[in-house]
Structures are given as structure tokens and as C-alpha cells.
Length: 344
Image (cartoon, rainbow, N blue to C red; front, top):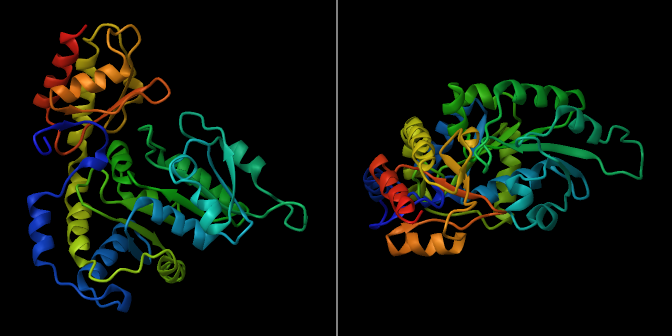
């Protein structure tokens, strides 16, 4: 529970653990703009080593991390190829157009993935043609906010295609540790097929704030300057970085428990009459279902749950989503499902 409530809205609702709070309280801090914050420097070094990259940069949010990547990779008027349902397209308020002046070229996703043949077809190959923008970046998510995971083989194939045309690849790895847990691989194995990657420490990893952008030293040096332009040059961020260290080093190792709890929730929800559960979509900590002939509407279910100290989101395009995390136990899953059973 969080503050006496069962919160299934997202893995973003996780709050700092007691260990994080203590680490934040005792963190050694300095002015990060001057490069003097020892804890932030340590976090960035840990992240760079963990993902096999030369350098890393702390930023306040996943959106800033993604937009900073686009802002640094892309010259105004150049084009980015991405899936039509990805976070950059659907949940970042058109920032790529506003900040980087990038043209977005979306590819219809198939189970969250851009087909390789479509990516290649969309790449602007004749850079001498003055009528077309230059393809400057290919980007996608792993895992995505629909809970789907890209395989290492897919990542390898996208990178090989991008390299063929000398185009960098940025991966929104907000939930990369979830993907690595599902695949049973080290995140470094996945990161080798990216030029840059953003990693969120507040989605399921319990840090209160922050994402990390990793890449080459040259890229991160450029991104650090552009972070300042975006207002992300912060001062004593070691208080936040202290929690981020625990998120990366410790909380990333327990995500299998969240995935197992989500699987258990899928099994329990299939007891509820009138709803359609989608077990095949449960790869990480997300459970998807439709209400169908269930007696309550989406809004009514949200209100009913709230009356019983359970917080959920309403449907999105007809689909309901419950998300397990560090503060959701099997016992609490039983409470939620039993509440739904009581209304069928």
C-alpha cells in the first residue's frame, strides 16, 4: 500500500523506500552545474558502466531525457522515425517539434514494433534531394507503455539497419530493466544495440525523481549543454541521485516479483464474469482487460474502487490497465479482485 491505499494506476506511483530516504538524508552534495556534486557524479558513473556506455547524464524526467536525446541528435528540420504509439509521439506534448524542430515520421506498430522493412522504406536515402528532410534518428521503446518487450534480436536488427545508413538509434528505455528481466539478459547486452538510451528511475524503481541518459562522451557533453538550455541544469541534485543509485543497483533486481504478481492478477481476474482479460499482453508488470458485460462502467468502477481505498485509472480506448509494483502484494491483489467479484 501507499498512504493506506492500493494504487494500481502505474509503476510511476512508487514512493522512495526507507533506505532511499536515509541515503537522501545523508547524501554528500555539491553544485552539479559546476560538476561538484559527488553523489550525482557517482550515479552517472554507475549508469555508464552498467549500460556499457562512455558517459551518462542525470535529468529530472523521462520526457526530458527523450527530448534531450532528440534535441542533441537532430538538427532543426531533420526527421525522426518512430512507432506511432510511442511515448515521444503520444505522451510528450509535441515537444520534439517545439524543442528540436524535428519532423516526426511515424510507423504503424505491430505488437509495439516497427517492421524492419517499413523502417528501411521510410529512411530518406537520397540526401542530395533538396525536397526531402534528412533522416537523423530512429527511436523506439523497450519495454513500451503497453507492456510489450522488444527482443535483443530485434534491437540488433534495428541497429544493423540504422548503421547501414549511418543513422543513430535512441531507445526510450524507461522500463528497460523490466524488459531485461523478462528476457533474462543484462541491460548492457541490450544497450550495445543503441547509440543512446534513456532510463527512468521512478517507474517501478521507487526513486522519487529522475532519469538517466547514456551515450558516448561526445554526445553526453553536447547533451549536458542542451540540458542547461532546457532548464535542467540543477544544483545539489545529490539528494535525488542518492535514491537513483539504489534504484539502479538494488530495486532493478526485484522486478521479477512485480511480473509474477501481475501474472497472478491475470489468473485471478479471469474469475470475474463479464470482463475479457488479455494474458498474452502481460509480459511485465501490466495487466490489461476490457469490461465487456461487467455490470459497472469504467467510471463507476473507478469510483467504487476509490470508495474502498483502491486507486485505478479509467479505460483508455476501451482498455483497462492495472499495474503491479513494489507496493502491491498478492494479498492486495486478492482484495482488488474480490471487490470486483462482489459486483458481478
